Length: 244
Image (cartoon, rainbow, N blue to C red; front, side):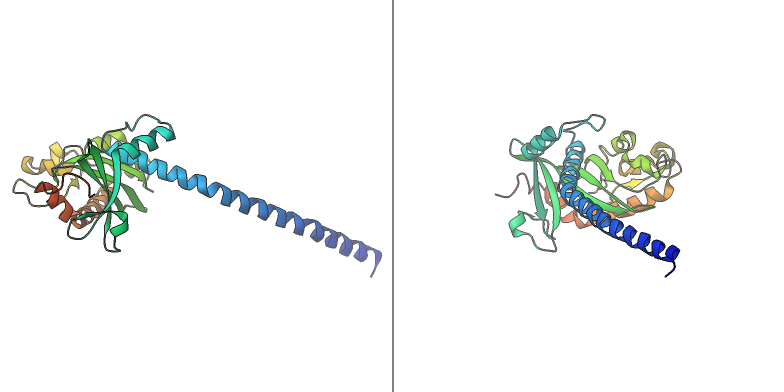
């Protein structure tokens, strides 16, 4: 080897000796950090879900920030996580089967004030995740929240805003004869585009987000149909308290 080639080879070898341990150390640090933070990330996700469940039944305000311990304390005091089988029977976690659906109930003095249906619906750009609370009459929506979505800010992303979510309160999932009709998002203001007799089953749409409203409407109908057996039980006043 010429002197220049020798020194070039030596320099490259030293570079490799320096870079290899550095890469290994960095990968170990990143892996450790990722593993260590995962537990905290999962905890924060759980707290955010609990916060949205509490908002859906009016126990927290969407516009306010709350300490994590307050959210968890209020959730444990007022909300019970259950499952519902295809026949509409409420069951505990220990009795659940793979065909059962998750359900949360809002308790007040031991009785069910409302039940909360978790939903994940197709949106324009991805899944929309949230909760729909229904009063213990099995017919009237008492709250609606979204905690995760991929919709466009200022358009479909308005589904997470307070003005849109307040529109759901008081809407009916059954018609005057008691038949299930779900609830839909109108293409505009309900008062302007929906006939008076159907207005109890519609919420105001979002300007420029017709497809988001269309997909969310279809997704909620499908999910509420799955939960219709338990809603019927509430309408017949056959459920007043959680099992056990």
